[in-house]
Image (cartoon, rainbow, N blue to C red; front, side):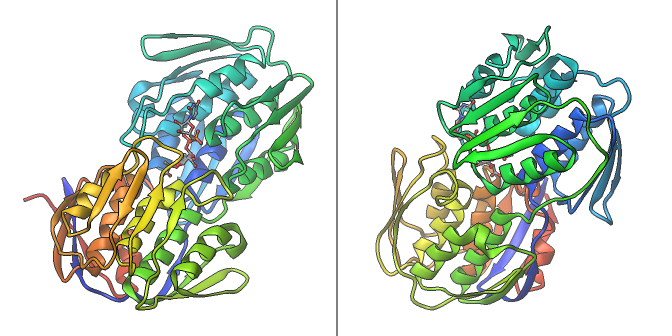
Amino acid sequence: MKKLEVIGAKKLKGTINISGSKNSSLPILAATLLSNKKIEIQNLPTVKDIETMILLLSSMGSKINLSKKKKSVNIHNFKKIKTYASYNLVKTMRAGILVLGPLLARFKKAKVSLPGGCAIGARPVDIHLKALSKLGVKYKIADGYIHATAPKGLIGNKIKFSKISVGATENLVIAASFAKGKTILKNCAIEPEVSDLVNFLRKMGCNIKWTGRRTITIFGVKKLKEVKYNIMFDRIEAGTYMIAAALTGGDLKIVNVKPKIIKTEIDILKKIGADIRTKKNKIRIIGKNKIKNLKIFTSPYPGFSTDLQAQLMVLLCKASGKSQITEKIFENRFMHASELNRMGAKIKIFGNKAIIEGNVIFKPAELMATDLRASVSLILAALTAKGKSIINRIYHLDRGYENIERKLRNVGAKIRRISQK
Ligand code: EPZ
């Protein structure tokens, strides 16, 4: 089992290139199942979840050529596609549920494993299924799989999501692109990754428009075009490194980003006391010694992202007073708090609220990663702790951060991957 060894304390200085977005790549790769034309997708991040999604598509018969060097993939789904997504692939990458919409739209049937829960929550898919039923899908749950059919094909309809869900919005946008007639989706997630998916589908020839702040109107089409598409930057990776600069009192240039897309996080870090200057596709962030405490909650975009909650918690441990974070998206996303407390943090959890004492000096320790964003928060804390920390179970990290050791080493961190003795 691989571990990470981090020797702190280090100020980070230099430039970090941001990779393509994992959470944009996954729905776009799933959406390629709609088309029998050639598709090229560029700027894919080389992370485990993308490899798993590509494995899943290949297992269904998708013809895929991945060029790791060029970070691009050529996909051609012209052959007979197996409308089956197995448990062994979906269980490790929950976004596998996103093949449900395109399979039903194009092939009118699908057998897709229920993704199951993960460390941060139960992760149900009831909103996906209820909305798909409104397009004429019949389904039953048996032996851990969703057995779904749309005998007459999908029929457009008016749908209002009972709760804002990124995945459900993405599944339905893809499915409705081939439904007969008009579909109106209300109470949609408006994360930038949803917009990236809509842009990709429109480029393929789908008829999709934003007709309200959280409303998308889709007219079903039958024919699609060949397409070449460039994935947007990973705003969570960018936010993670911005927090790292603020935390270590460093000076980082974060490049290949669109600052306006992460305005909320930039404003939060400015409020905490970081010096941030933005240009067209770069952000310079200089950490200050004084970090102000904060009371904040996570919420759907454009609110503060739940995927940056663990990272911000580390920063607030260094603030000059008590802070509070309320996690309003997932029911169990504070697993990192107990590991941070083992490094000297003083974090108390009351339901979905974390009370964070400030002025903490992190001590090095042997640590356990529990989920993707928790694992990166342990690295951040270890960067500020004088001495050697070891982080176990870093397979969580490899799901969503491309070359994190190399990117951090290039800006002064002492971090390396070691094998289990
Ligand atoms: C996406 O997950 C992201 N994953 C998550 O990022 C992100 O945290 C989340 O959106 C929220 O922004 C990808 O895009 C691959 P949701 P998703 O459906 O689509 C509940 C990361 O670290 N819900 O918006 O699964 C759900 O339990 C990952 O990169 C239902 O109840 O999130 C949660 O409490 C973690 N029923 C809330 O809604 C449903 O049918 C939001 O979930 C679907 C969701």
